[in-house]
Image 1 (tube, one colour):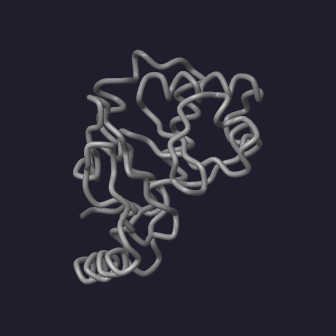
Image 2: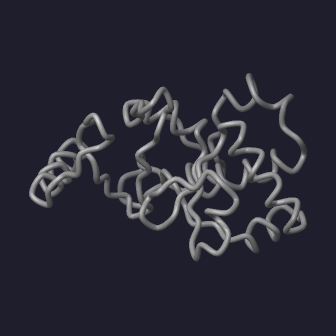
Length: 172
């Protein structure tokens, strides 16, 4: 794989499918999210990148030059367009503004990146794609294993440890 120093790979689908539909503010916010996730390379394993990152409202404002209101509006619009996912510390997806308001840390990820590289982690419940979001620890853990009639079935600690170990073996 070809890497250029001091650059961030950007998914082609942004340019090919979404550029013309994005507002100026939405594009700026989305580019910050892409930079803060796939723009960072794991220092030991040069092929690994962040799936999501904690980004504060203030950081968005400083990086984009936008007002807080413009940032919030752009985030809500990007969520509605399905281009980003916002989660809390536990990986719970926060679709609504009310859910995000007052949450201490919000984690952002771009679906442009996730769909291309992690499409196998999507599951379908009630005809809606639900993403099992990974943490920024760069350790892949699956909190849920299989779909039951009510939703996901929780995985025991022993099963999670085995999944982590198997995943680490794959990446070494």
